[in-house]
Length: 378
Image 1 (cartoon, rainbow, N blue to C red):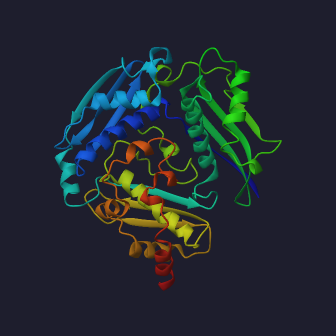
Image 2: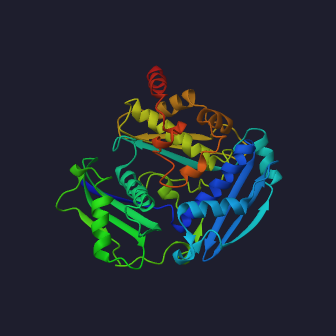
Image 3: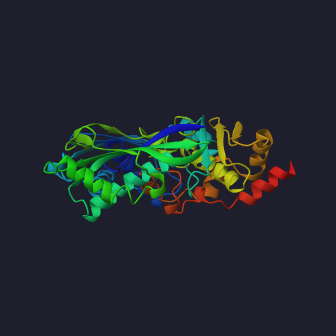
């Protein structure tokens, strides 16, 4: 049976991703000095302005405006003609401490909030990520590489990618459509941009075997993309949660990641759910696996563990095996995944899952033997 599925990604210069990166850069700066800090940092950008707000409890001091300007400049918004300039934009801050009502529950090692978090893994790609989001991220990352390296110097930081994969009996068979929207200088022609992307971006990311004569490729479909970034659209932390996870291929609890310290289970339990799902697939128990963890504020153990696979595995028994194998308390997750360190800014672009390039612990398959043994014992 054939079916089609599409996922999108965005570049680091997309307004929402600017915000994610600033929020996580603030988190990194604080957690590098105070690993036990409580951070919930939100960023908003629009033409010429950055607003950073949230609840932060820490004994250290960081220069938040300086961090924001550094991030914006590193992304590439470093001159006025790009519509946003790190040196001249206004940076406003409004920071309070974490609510004592929340702190009370977290201080006794409970979850920082209620909610449900999802993790997913499948055999579509070497990273055990769904093919559509995997290749969409690859294209977005490649756009930044050719811009920064000078191979396509007329590109500007903002951009989006989208990949439609045709599945045949659940296996990726071919790429049906590729959409690349890349911000560019006003002097460039549509034809030159399309030719360069087809030469310097797509072949470096998409395997040749997946592209055929019927694959549709759209480059800047409106014909022009000069005005971009915060000049063209406001941005906000946490508005790209599907880009951050599985491209819509799996469930999502609704909580964002960026700007939140690891006591917030929106972030840490999502990483743990991915870790569990990836180890189940790596163990050979299933080719596809979705895990849901649910928490109550102030309570350490998850109130429910749900596992769903594409095989005839006993999912109720598998959920019990998961409880026996993994420490899913907030403190257990933080310890297992080593989350009290400044790793978050790099995760704020090109997805939080499948990031084997960053060496994060939730991408390891080191518990495959343990979960298989626990499942077989039950």
